[in-house]
Length: 190
Image (cartoon, rainbow, N blue to C red; front, side, top):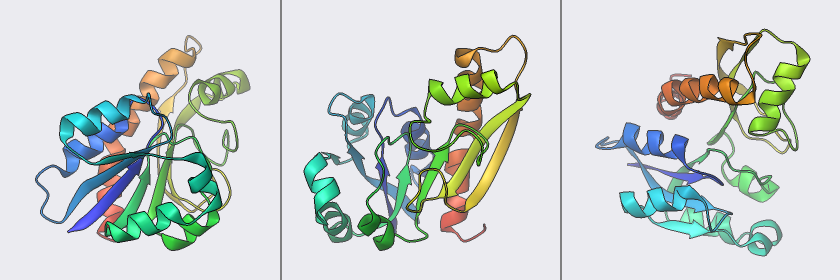
């Protein structure tokens, strides 16, 4: 059984889709949820789904190997970043090299990097005049939104779109593709 830890900072809508996707799967499951936000909706999902969760302590996260050891002790093999807003420490990346995946709400390499998340990304896409946006699923390395791209899906940006309407299109792509791509990556089909 491959155990997945999900790191999330917000509502957890992608986390819920991932949990649902792996429910009943004999080969993989979501075993742990970690959040840097004690008020995050994802913690309510963890409680409802009876999945253990941890609220991340900033100092321990950035100044020690505490979470790397915790994940290893819990036999976590994969880390999924699903709307997690902190940069991952190098030691944690090295401990899960090639087994840490992130989703970004735009077509990288455009509209990525520090501070580019949520509505900020969608606003930047609209202001650029690009007629297309989408999602990028990629491996995590030491640079924000930089690791090897695993998968992209696209959607049109219409002249009527604003950040909210574009976000809805992006969420649909995330929900449709992210859980399946995680499974394919874990099964080495990518």
